[in-house]
Image 1: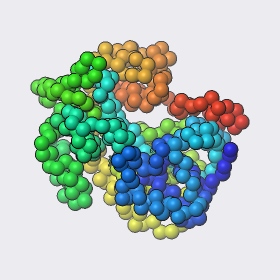
Image 2 (image 1 turned 120 degrees about the horizontal axis):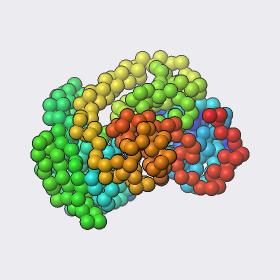
Image 3 (image 1 turned 135 degrees about the vertical axis):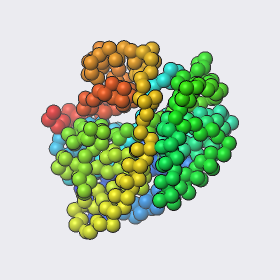
Length: 426
Ligand SMILES: Cc1cc2nc3c(=O)[nH]c(=O)nc-3n(C[C@H](O)[C@H](O)[C@H](O)COP(=O)(O)OP(=O)(O)OC[C@H]3O[C@@H](n4cnc5c(N)ncnc54)[C@H](O)[C@@H]3O)c2cc1C
């Protein structure tokens, strides 16, 4: 099966859906694909008991009326194909190749997980991962939960866990009390965000909010039972059933790197004013171009959709909105920048690569990521270094090599379709 679309959008989160809607409005044929079974991306993830939220409902309702839009759920990009094509694996259709005139990358971000002693025990997840699991139907009613790491995602996880009946004992934030307070005060300039923060935290009633603190160790026999938290010079231990720990987000640039798009030192896709990347015909929007929240992702998506469809309309208002949310994103970045305690590597015995069971000590004996991979197999398991690569980059300053397809485990039948299509030249 091979289909051609004027515009292909990878990612059905706020950026991708807004891009698709804007592009389709101008008459282009548009395909939006996402590896999740339902559209919404991370923030609007749907699941049992979690129907589409209001903004998503609106976007999907409009997209449904646009007959030139094709939604491809449960479909992931396995490899780029040359020229201007993608090899996909779809739960419904298996291996599929499609081609495009313009490609919009709206691949979002991933959570940054940093290893600590005991982090591979069952019951330990990322903070965003806990949300995804709850939205996917995992029961947490009555469970004692500690949420840790850094950034606004901890607050979203707190709200989701409480709404599902979890007993959140503490939110452990690595940023200092001063930075958090300064950020809180800055929300006075964004009243909607302030209201949202208050609703989500309920003013932290009934929950400890520990700043300048990090998780040191998860304890348990076969499953997490306790957590040790470093709070300045002191340590506290809490009995718990779950630890959800994530240190902010890292842009998901796998496909962009494979296509040869320029990437900033901070690991974001470089885009111009129209969201065009350095590769002709490829645009990018949302958190793959820099972490900044759903509002920024949505505006960038709309600009990318208009630019991809070749509309020359005045975009001053959209650009002003984008500038506003980019300023907000910078405030978040400053407030929750990782401090020394979070940047300090774990001890040598702690697993860095949990797919291949490789400890931090084994990995740091090598001079760079490539050597470490070749000698220890770190980063060569199911997640393909998405987790340990980000941690190694933070601790050791290593740059991960550009990813090579297939980007994720794929069926043999899908891979065989590659032989019919030439891969882009290296
Ligand atoms: C785990 C997690 C949970 C989050 N929860 C919240 C929250 O509750 N509240 C909040 O304000 N913010 C949350 N965020 C932050 C969130 O990322 C943004 O605010 C917002 O969703 C960004 O929109 P986006 O369109 O840029 O990307 P996303 O919403 O992340 O959408 C990108 C989509 O692209 C898909 N994708 C990526 N690569 C491929 C590929 N190769 N093939 C197919 N599909 C692909 C992804 O699965 C995803 O659905 C969360 C982030 C993460 C990582």
